[in-house]
Length: 103
Image 1: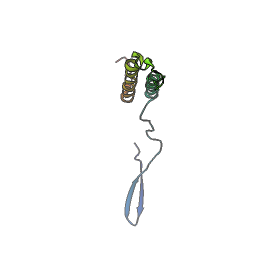
Image 2: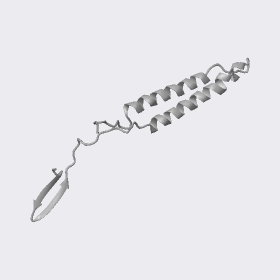
Image 3: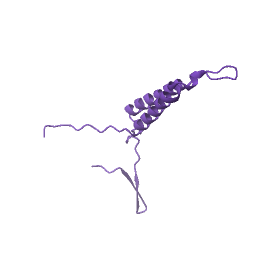
Image 4: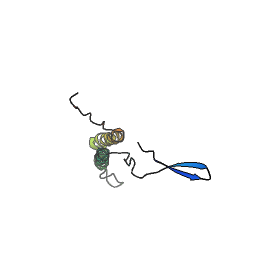
């Protein structure tokens, strides 16, 4: 197997420098699956914030809708689920498939 070094001889001194090639491992930190899972998690978080939004109570009129179970219980849980899903999407790493050669 060839050694990736350049040998330069000058005045009876041998200098070896490693050759740096750009064709090495250019893999990204995340795979396509990770990015898809991250997008799903972000969409769930945005959905949770949209469920929390709505009309508010002013000094002229009281709006009892601000205390609805959708806003104070369901929406925060949806956001929490979305954030947990994002954490799982960051940690997720698919194992390479083992090939069965019949051995």
